[in-house]
Length: 242
Ligand code: TMP
Image (cartoon, rainbow, N blue to C red; front, side):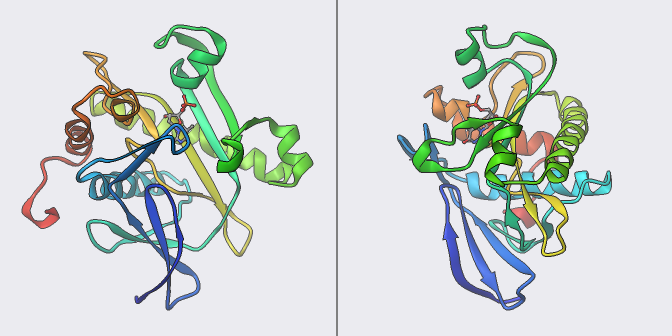
């Protein structure tokens, strides 16, 4: 498959067209931003870690019946994905109060909640990705009622599958962000990435943060935390993955 012109450059990834209209190639960068671009930096080696971790988790989800955009890992930073139209929503799943929810609702970070929380944000950098509810989404036509039902059902299933997998790796899945796409046939599938950039992972035993909060909050040990997540999920890095 041939990599053609760049379609889009985001904060952490680039997307390229290919010689097959059904597929794109995504390339993971080491660049990191936080606070809607207010803080910028680099996390050395992040691209290859997020690429491998995302692909590992997407394949695991596929095996358990969750449709994803994953097709094939091409190199340490590049992956072939299905072409989809991205539904302009960030779907946030929360198991434990943290981050913006803890701040907004005035609860202590780490508070256990009586159930899993699902939030939607409208993907628009200029507006700062405002939180919206299902009636906004339907009113603006960002998704249909059936699509929204599917997105919510898939998000809860993904949470169950990922939560169990991470628990086995000694990690608590505190919260995470998902994005979904619409295939040309109209199917809703999981897109984007699932990585320490887009999830909160806390060490089950020590509570240590092993995710992008180390960058957002200047906690230090950012690279080591990403490498630790990779190691726990995929094992020690062998020479073939260097
Ligand atoms: P929040 O507590 O800052 O709202 O973040 C909730 C989860 O969603 C957390 O795991 C980080 C992830 N997230 C993203 O991946 N991208 C974003 O733009 C935001 C706001 C959150």
